[in-house]
Amino acid sequence: MGVGVDLTVIWAAIIAFAVAAYVVMDGFDLGIGILFPKFKVGPERDKAMNTIAPVWDGNETWLVLGGGGLLAAFPLAYSIILPALYAPLTAMLLGLVFRGVAFEFRWRDPSHRRIWDAAFFAGSVVATFAQGITVGALLQGISVDGRAYAGGWWDWLTPFSLLTGASLLVGYALLGACWIIWKTSGPLQDDAFRLARRLAILLIAAIAAVSAYTPFLEGKYYERWFAWPGVLAAAQVPLLVAITAALLMRSLARGHHRAPFALTLVLFGLSMLGLAISIWPDVIPGRVSIWEAAAPEESQSFMLVGTSVLIPLILAYTGWAYWVFRGKVDEEGYH
Image (cartoon, rainbow, N blue to C red; front, top):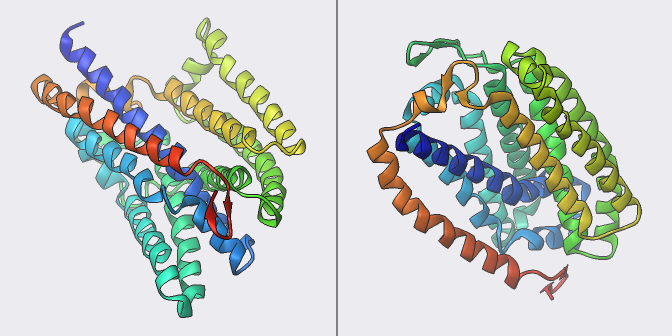
């Protein structure tokens, strides 16, 4: 295998890392938006917003890196995926715009705070649901003819994509509740514990439903999960999911503050590992591999130089921000 193949794998890993970082870092603040109507109007909602105020802007950096990296490193995949998923991707961007505007204006325009709170909730729900639908639509397959999208406008809308959209809503909501548990105390934390216990059960059920559905979407998926001897390795993923789910339920029952958030992230990580097992090495499952979609080796090399500097810088300032605001939040702010 040549250097070009190595660069292609490296770029696939970079984009996968960017997507994972986005889920980790933006998932919980989207989750807080999804849960916003469950919090009492006034200090409780303000405290929930204050837990994410110092970091929410930077969290979406990873979405830009993932989308931009896909365009630059895998232009063929980008040119096929974008027209196939115009509707959910546009809805996601509009949802992120609405929640971003609402986040800023609820403090600057208190006379219309109820409207901004509703916009923050709606934008979070729409953005999350659209992301889940996008993952489901990609996983179920995209029609390709030669080097172009060959499907219709509504191909992304199926029972499976709706299931993945609803599952991501539950998952992000659980992340948001666990973040609130970690970063607050008092009545707001008590409410978050109650929500998290219910959402954890729903997320476990959602993971089971998506996992049961996925192998039957594509013959290759079934082979990767159930063909011998690969089944021996693949079977470890659902086993780890079951163990992590049990630990999550126990940590919530015992009132732990940090463990629920960490264990929920582990569930997300295992879910993404399951997704990778299903589709690797394709970037468009069953249609286009990462090598077929890759940009020329020279382009990948050139971009890798900048990325090798950019990613450590992003990680450094992100880590510093989280470290500075590492305490719990009360009515006065962080302490």
